[in-house]
Image (tube, rainbow, N blue to C red):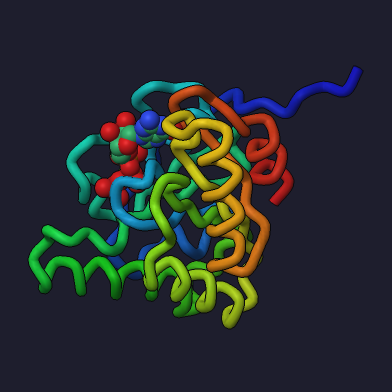
Length: 193
Ligand SMILES: Nc1nc2c(ncn2[C@@H]2O[C@H](COP(=O)(O)OP(=O)(O)OP(=O)(O)O)[C@@H](O)[C@H]2O)c(=O)[nH]1
Ligand SMILES: [Mg+2]
């Protein structure tokens, strides 16, 4: 029987808000990006089988720095702040947008793989399309994950996933951080990166 890839070790290393020496250490980065509150931090917790390695919250805008977690001593999972948080002051939202675009597009961080997360129950927003377009432009490999499918019934799932695929122009992986659905598949993708 094939041995399942596992995460044996996960530890918080640092949070950054711009240029940092961690970007120079040669350890590959897998980044988790998406709108605020879609469950980026929860997905990382589900992958590492820890409830609270990464702080998650029902209040959008929880993550404000770019947080690095060392996984199995060999790669980083990078938890980014969420974009498109409507209630955030314009200045703060712009700052976060710039921080994300710097991480994705400046060439300083060069993530190996980006996990672009959307909410399976919500139509992708223009910012999600923009993010997918930027990733294609920068030629950064990415995978799209539709989280919170546990909230949908089977027919809603099928319909929404199709619609999200059409809008973002790529295949998506249904996921539930709450129920650990899709975990095996996403785990093998992020550990292969
Ligand atoms: N039902 C359900 N709720 C989820 C799931 N994943 C996350 N949530 C909830 O969604 C809320 C936001 O989760 P976070 O992981 O903090 O989201 P985030 O994308 O990191 O948010 P920011 O850091 O603010 O950008 C929390 O209340 C989670 O419990 C899921 O798969 N199913
Ligand atoms: Mg978060």
